[in-house]
Length: 400
Image 1 (cartoon, one colour):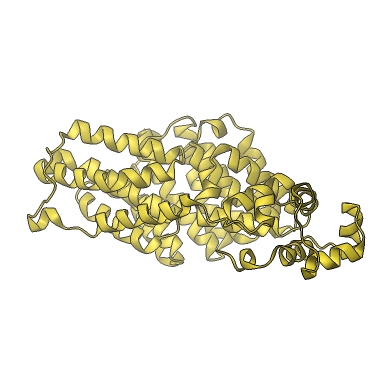
Image 2 (cartoon, helix red, strand yellow; image 1 turned 45 degrees about the horizontal axis):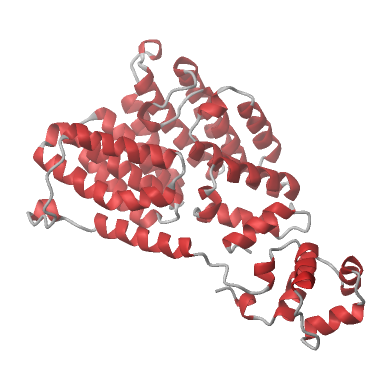
């Protein structure tokens, strides 16, 4: 529970009034009360026992009445998420197959059924159904490992994909340390298969960047990209071009975070050349790679480099493409968080708020469950010009 929730209701009124940058006199005028009345309420001399008065105060302060009453804003879903993530950690900590002590008495799934389960989990992730994916992962990992043990050749792909999903989710939900374990397992399982190694390397890049290892990330991503790159781009197949282009994007974002503007631009130009041959509307190896994805990456790189004007310009270019609507909800909402950050860098809380509201419309879980989304939301609602709807959303999510 937040320390503010422990305060008496009058003190909470004072807290939110100051946060909204309202003097007692202005606050009183908007309520149709006297300054003395406000002062007595905030000091606890006068009680607030009318629901209608509480609602009026909450409306002026642009918060939910429940927040004003100090009801715990920590939702059950947050606790559930913690429990679910712990089950994923436990699943990654098991070595039942190599130790020959599989305790689960259930049939080993055939490869085709395992592939279907993996595809279902990927779809749930791309629709930003993070609680559902969290619930699916422990059994998915156990089943994929058992299938691989029974059919190592055919079962390798679903196993690598299960680890890729796990790493993506853990990075998304702010646990890069455990994500490292998942991606390490993916890389080990993929060894020997050039395509699977490149696919797993996409998540490796995410994990390295999440740990701030930008130089390592750039180096590893470039090695993986050029390993999967076709000898002649014109003869390359869309799936391998998509992997190569996505890895170049990962390298570019790492370079941008390191402050290397020229390298980031060059790598994104190289990715754009590949994207033109792939086109939008495809999702080879769950990359969503195409011209629109490259434009979004240019915007994200500009955010990292502190170039707000370019970040917003590339965003505007991307959302005008048909490919914008073809991208997974998770991809679009994550990008909108980057755009909100760009607007915040420009001290434009109103535009940042609009981007967040759109992100919430596209994929509510990006703000409900993703720490990065909640952090941006908290920054926006601190501004007195923040949209009322966003303030109510923040209050409902326990973000303040």
